[in-house]
Amino acid sequence: MPNDSTTDGYHHGDLRNALLSAAEGLLHEHGPGGLSLREVARVAGVSHNAPYRHFRDKAALLQALARRGFERLHAAMMDAAARVPHGPEQQLIAAGIAYVQLAVNHAESTQLMFGGTLDPATDAAGDTAGRDAFAALQTIIESGISAGVFRQREPRELALVAWTSMHGLAMLITAGLLEYDAADPAALDQLVGSVASNVIYGIAR
Image (spheres, helix red, strand yellow):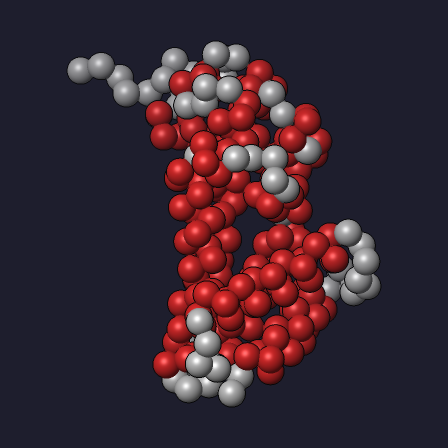
């Protein structure tokens, strides 16, 4: 029976994940300009041809990184909301905190996801991942409308208010335009929670 591992010692799925992890590290250190398939291969410890088994070029690699970022964002918001089953207001705050935490802690990935350098039309899976992340907020909004705690407005419209507020806050923080104690994780949670609460006041009944 043939071995299903690659000549570089990775199973096929593991190779792709190893390449993406290496690429994320390079993205964090050097930004998109510091990425190349050859450098990713070097960091991952595989042959320089190995990345081409999964990514036809650098653009495909960047699309995969952005897609991974949106999938991570979606999971983080859903998990945060699930840990607060006591009402849509608190779920929305929890999801907002998760959003900003991820955006601040993975600033380079966030820039790649939202920087406008990638074309969603050429990456249907990536576009779907982004829509799924937005849908996580919309689901919370719909629950709040059904429960009578959010205004009877179009859920997508209210979700857009929440999304843009949290995203704008994250961008201000990563740009260094808002002061908070970066060494204290609770300080970020408090700042985001305060802003998210004020967003809720704007959409609550």
